[in-house]
Amino acid sequence: MPSDPSTWFVQRIVERCTMPAVRSDLRTGIGVPVDRAPRMHAHVAPLVRPSLAHETAARYCVAALIARRPDGALPSEYIGNLGVSIARATHLAEQTREDLVRRLTAQPASRVTIDVGRVVSGLRDAKVPVNFPRLLNDLTAWPQHRTRIATEWLQSYSRELNPITLPN
Image (spheres, rainbow, N blue to C red):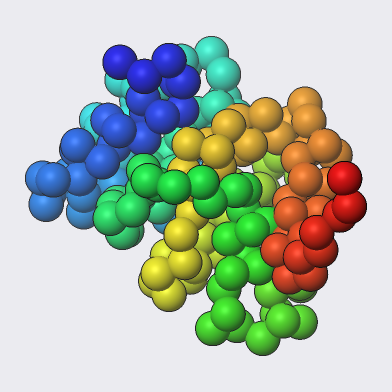
């Protein structure tokens, strides 16, 4: 078992996605709140702590996104955070990418998993890599650490677009 709970969770979801009916159930949760994704409960509820509502929402969001396109859900190389993934979405105009990352980083905890679900669906459809364990960690921590995570996403986005090698 991996030491990181987020990686463990992503692995469990990838395993479940080998069953077409389960994968279909999980996809119903993309961009919707937990209470509007009843077909996901049998597959995700056993993997969450019921007392932590935002963690539950984060896990449902990530599970639905993995089910949409499970290939590459566990990256073999370092990808970075969601800001890096949005910067690498070269199928979108730069202004569109910037608007996306700014809109996501402004979201309150009550909306972030819904909007992230919609944005990441588009990224994955375009085969842009997303680090799902990292995304799960960020979404889970969003209510307490939104400012830090938002800053990291914005900085990573900017660094990916404008790489500069700093002198030692």
